[in-house]
Length: 553
Image 1: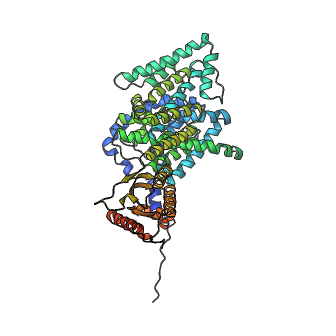
Image 2: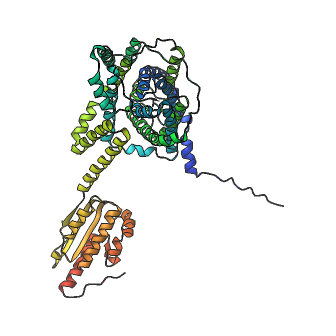
Image 3: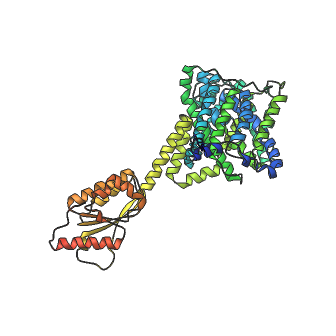
């Protein structure tokens, strides 16, 4: 009888990789909140849709893509991100930060380039989610996030100055010079009317915000100004890609992807802190935003991100599931279906007022006061990030802010690292003055290694006992400098004993040559009393004129 053996099918991916990739897709858990919250989600979706309409139009205009593009992005990206994103209550669409970064691309390469950038950035985000890079973004420090947000608010407000004065906009010009030029060259015999409309819209929005009932002030103000909406969604199509342009747009696409990841994860994190809506899945959030930007680009829209203001409105309105964001997208699609035929008379100054009012609410005064009270380094990081956001660009501002925050953090960490000389335990013995018991505390890393090692090198003791049990961090530079100081002391004729090297540091110390630099491996101790007894025995031999044991392995 012949036994047939069937080979087990080979799995192309490891189990953990397959589990990660399956976790990026929608599942039954996404529908769980619906059983108890669907009524609240419907109402929240309608509320956030009303709020999102004027913002979508305004951000579309501000980016240079046009109001229709902003609305398409809110509908398509909002629906896709609601299904595939990593937060139950995130609302995605066009945002002020994205409009800021897209405006120079439109000025330099035209609107078709933004469609290409949207697809490219989406592909980058999908890959980032699949490669588990979503968690990297959460390490951006608090002062950088606040400075970045405040800088964006300043840019959004400055961008509206030419619109509010009905002044010509010079494409490609930086925001601050363009605003100053608009004020200097404005024809005030004509500019008073658009300026009055802008200020009127701001007043309506702020008044509605202060009245009970959460009136949609931005929508009321824009409807009062009358405007045209697109009559239907365009059919999806692949953007025309010129290989030469593709290479040119690779850098902007990476910047857009980075901004989308930062803003979306920040927004999702804010939402999670506002209500118990389930934990945020950062990799899935990045993955979902990537799909949303790809879909938006295929429909002629712009890159999308999680929108902090709309997400906050969604949560405050009672949303607890993804249904709310889907209802928001459906409501906007309904506006497109019935909005054709409205007079095309929306003054740009009205949308400018909406955006200035939005910018005023982007910065939390309480957060800023708390940040400035923390310390000078935190305040400096905040201010520098704002300045770089306004004067340079968004991604450079984040990079500089993170580097500056890291510098201050490392300096503070280095200040906690020091060397202290301790008294020897137990009764005094002859020759104790020739023994230096040195306790190292803190983090022995590149920022503190030289200073700490210089303190150790100043000793003229015959025997040096280094207590390392309180060293929390040992990096390659610190281990290398520690090995160097042991070699230096041994070369002077001193005997070095190491006590309390933590288990997690032993591999690093061994690779850097710390243990090899000791006269013998027997000079490594785990017990302080034993190390001190050994040190006293060395001193006693030297006082008696006996030879010191030679280096051996």
